[in-house]
Length: 82
Length: 82
Image (cartoon, rainbow over all chains, first blue to last red; front, side, top):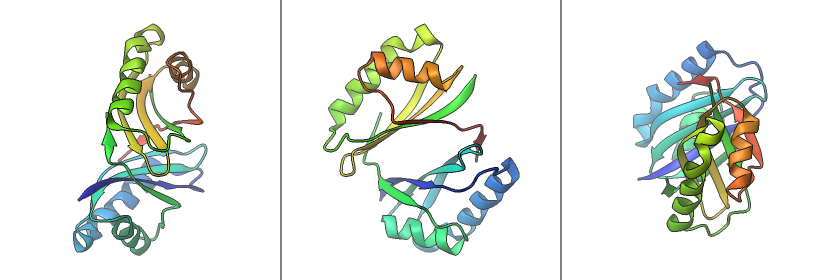
């Protein structure tokens, strides 16, 4: 298992409810790929959403996001933390 | 006070020690701008570093990063969290 940060763009105007709903959609599916989405942060002005997860691979993260209806634009493994 | 996610690029090959050192340099200065850097995550392969902070403004975050020697490429206020 490794840590990943993924980025979604084009979410301009996203609301707290929409972020919560999207995160719940990920959580409902995540076990099927042994992924766990830990946190998500959104900037409605630029439309950027960051998700932090623990997962076996970037592909597993993307499969959950795709099935939940919001494919990520970038996924980075982040092995280093401070 | 608000939450911010900032992004640094071009840090290809960054090591755990270098990330720790950069984060410590931020922590040593942060009080002067009432910023607090909570966490940082790095992807040495793509050279991307993400920092999560609580701060009065994006400018305050940038001033600390600049004085610590590593200006951010993007700073986003992230008022929404899940």
